Length: 88
Image 1 (spheres, rainbow, N blue to C red):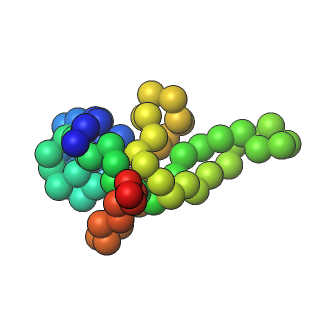
Image 2: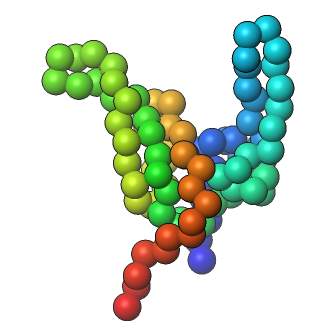
């Protein structure tokens, strides 16, 4: 099983959140604070992309983990159900 760096925490195992004036650090739910995710696992993801009017919009995607270096503000939406690609 191949693994790739978690796009949520960028391999750190934790995420930073800001609410009003308070800053907090939380464990990454996408990779369970391991910093890596399986490449064959499907995730619900969002990223920013330019639409046909050349304005930034949020794109939703469900499938294998995308490369965080190629997609602007790539985030995994925490999905507690393990969905694996059928290789048979």
